[in-house]
Image 1 (cartoon, rainbow, N blue to C red):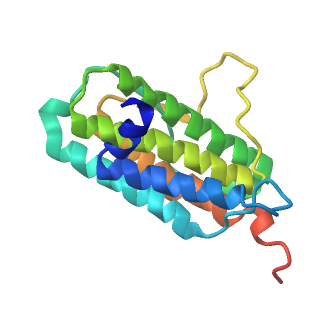
Image 2 (image 1 turned 135 degrees about the vertical axis):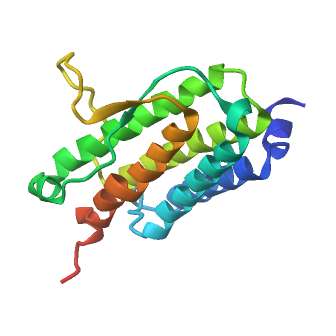
Length: 194
């Protein structure tokens, strides 16, 4: 059977995420494309990822006890102080978003090792795939990659949550907040616009 059968025998939620990723990759690798990535400035792409995160969180709320795990997750803060955000330059905003995406990816990926229901596992896999796709979107906008901090101090932009449902709620809010703000104001999307 192998990997090919596993691609076609996944649940529909994971298939949608894989399909979206495949479309983006095919667009970027199209013959005759002079640049490696074309900017993805349409916020409807982000809306797709937000909807999938909502679906995962809703499934977790319905799952309750069968989807619980006794651990704390480090996640990014989702609140935005607009005065502080707008005073930051694009590199600082990008670092904050990339750092948050990195931490969310680590938290959600840590769930793969736990024994979860098939429903939860499909949402975990889809969320990890969506984070990879969001990273590709950021790369297409020339947003700098995540650079780990040089100090070992605790990051003031992080918090702890104690349930999978809270983890996915933070995921949704982070996408709706800081990621959306960064994408909406990406310089490459405003070139030639007066």
